[in-house]
Image 1: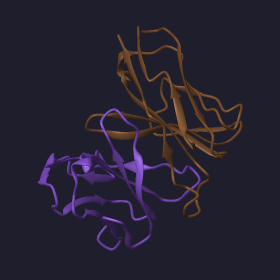
Image 2 (image 1 turned 90 degrees about the vertical axis):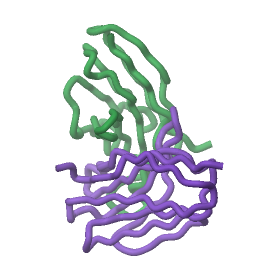
Image 3 (image 1 turned 180 degrees about the horizontal axis):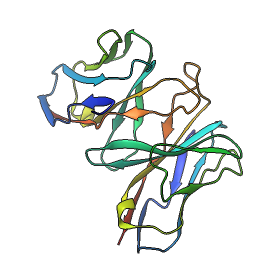
Image 4 (image 1 turned 60 degrees about the vertical axis):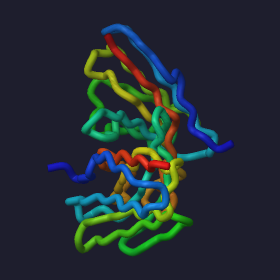
Length: 112
Length: 116
């Protein structure tokens, strides 16, 4: 079983829809939770960063972490065609290796 | 502009021919790391470095070497590339590790390597 599971999609939504992306994990030591956005032929771009449980909002993006359920989510409101990309969840235990464990990514297409 | 740069962006080579992928960051970051990205497997850490002259293995270090002689540079070396090292490679850096916000990792644009 992978440490981090993420539905690969693809997910196709109409412009303006609310998008929900999710990851589950098995390692209870994870404390830092990130969402990266990766456009085709580009490097991952840090979108949201959360420490421990709770919610964080940044513009149209909201990240939620539920450590009791080992479940994290990213919500995108009023989705735009420019949001079309692969979304990667990543987690870290904050230790000295600083290693990120990634989900395999969800491919999102927002249709105009 | 704060960034992580990698060169080359694309490389096709043959089995056994030594190659180096360079990585450089201009953010004065202590921590640097290499990942490879493969379909269905996601990104996996190859090597990391916590500071100059301090490097250690990640999850998939076999067939790779690194060095950290300067703070800004962290090259990835494939002494004898094999076809199973065909992949998309990313260099990443962060201010530090452990403390919240210190461990935010920023990624380079990637190097697509094909080994024939």
